Image 1: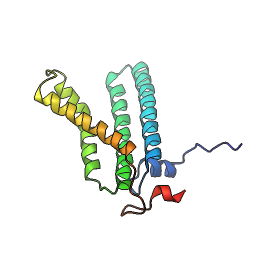
Image 2 (image 1 turned 90 degrees about the horizontal axis):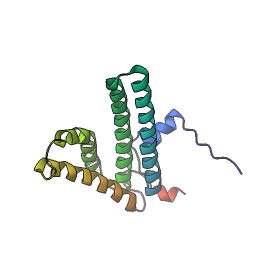
Image 3 (image 1 turned 60 degrees about the horizontal axis):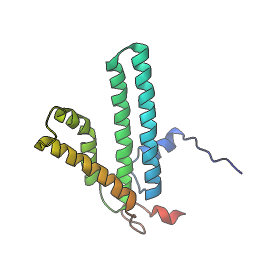
Length: 158
């Protein structure tokens, strides 16, 4: 039995995780999304631990975690864009997702001291719910059959 090649070269990595071109059906979306989340979490923990224990600097460790988080948000954004393309939708919804995803950590810090039932806390929780529901919907809704303005149906290429 032949062993599958799991190595990704830089071009393939860019096309799979950092490109907004084309369409992406549900299964690769789910697999890549979980891959990004798992890998970025592991890498962030390793870098945070290394920088904090070797350099003894929480600021450097926090900076490394922020850089990894930014890369994660960009990778997930490109997956969301291509998944929306598969549904025949443009980028406005993906841009809204990106803005919320980037600002989310700042939102949560701003409301940390506020009561849970305050208007600001409710808005932040609503935005968080929106991003989670969007991802769940993208995992469940089948893309448009046949070609659309964003490319050929990825399921017809099999």
